[in-house]
Length: 68
Image (cartoon, rainbow, N blue to C red; front, side, top):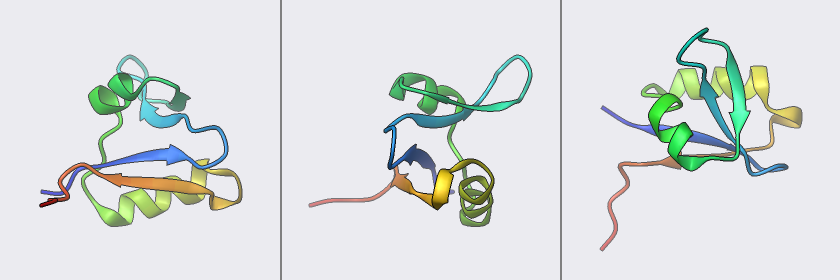
């Protein structure tokens, strides 16, 4: 299963959902994003970017990418 984190290309904050309310918001903390902002489906990533990123300016970080 894929694991993605979404980062704003304008503010460099990370998108995550609140563990208490489930509301989506931005955090400067990568740790918070990893705890509460991992998205598993590419379609959901696209929808979150459309709904929450100004001018759809986002950086999608694939946590499972393999490098040599």
